[in-house]
Length: 107
Image (cartoon, rainbow, N blue to C red; front, side, top):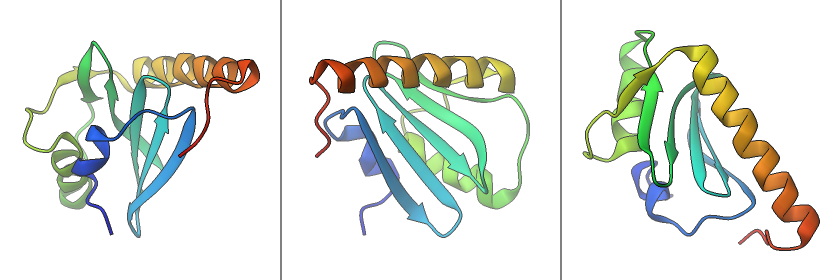
């Protein structure tokens, strides 16, 4: 199975889900990728903006998921959980628009 960090180098699609491990999920959208660990949004990658992560401290395992997600590229800017959720919502809207317009085929 592909490692979580390798997902950040894949071509963006309108919407894809990748399971990195039993408790780790990456949602790939148009222009962004989002990491959920144990069902909690903990980090993201926004094209042109780089990596962002939750300012909240998490368990050792979740911290490991974040480190794998960024793939040694630095841990990124820290954001409040609400700011992460707002940016994720904007990315979902962008991906939905791409799907509706027919420009968001999923690999």
